[in-house]
Length: 142
Image (cartoon, rainbow, N blue to C red; front, side, top):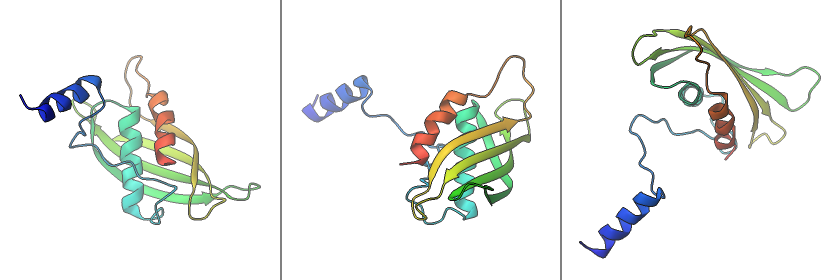
């Protein structure tokens, strides 16, 4: 076996090279994107949040979205997203509302402060994964 293959196998064993799933949407950046108000950008944001919140989801559809200025707080906006997604096995067209709180002090590099997630999935004892959503905030700010 070549040295290259051995090194590659070693890195994989250590978890340093993580394979990217083909179905993963790239995480958009609120800091770097110039297209924050573009529907394609919002679709990627929605898909990433749903994938963080729930296991085995597909067919993401943003029905509507809007950026709203926060009263009495200059340089603050909220992105309100309403959409649906399907579960891989049983749930279809799960209604979802997401509110992303943003600091827009730097007009070219917005910062995500928090994400509020709600969906209509009725499962026994299973809630969405808020920890993964909170981790996603960091990715949106890179």
